[in-house]
Length: 239
Image (cartoon, rainbow, N blue to C red; front, side, top):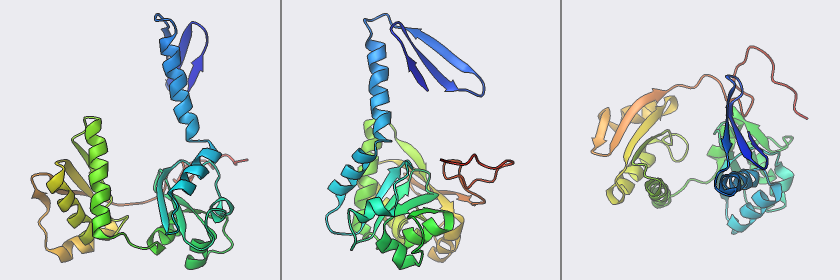
């Protein structure tokens, strides 16, 4: 939460614990300008027209899979306007929800939905999408590593073993990408991929100097952003 005025900007990091700090602008407003730039970037995440125009540019007459979307209320009608013949899936940033068009809803038998799917319904839509080739997976991982390197990040966790082509293909894609771009990759094991790991005959932990198979990730409930996490009290009704 960022508040601006002429002399100060106030950054509230956590309202619950009441952390607030006020910073004085001592450089002719450059700090305030920086915060305005941050606000501009954040606004882009909630600009419906910008998001839709970005999706349109990415659509080339083939099934389209988009990730990193923060739910601002797009529905199947918005995506149907982009394509009524090819499936479009917009994966929400929390990975527990997705927004899809009518083509994909028809494929999974949820024709009455508005296109905003949660948890198991979202998973059905994801797995109904055409599989990526191993070459595409390798390219995606390579591009991600290059982006992380640009920020000085040399290692990280991922639970992508479950969300693309399953255990075998995804591990092989990571191995191929890591030959080109070193990165300390710790792959979390989704509980539904444990059987694939057992069948592979691979050892636990170290697969190479840069690749490890680590903790099993067991899912129990959802997320706050999708309003599927188990709470002591009901979620407030959305307008």
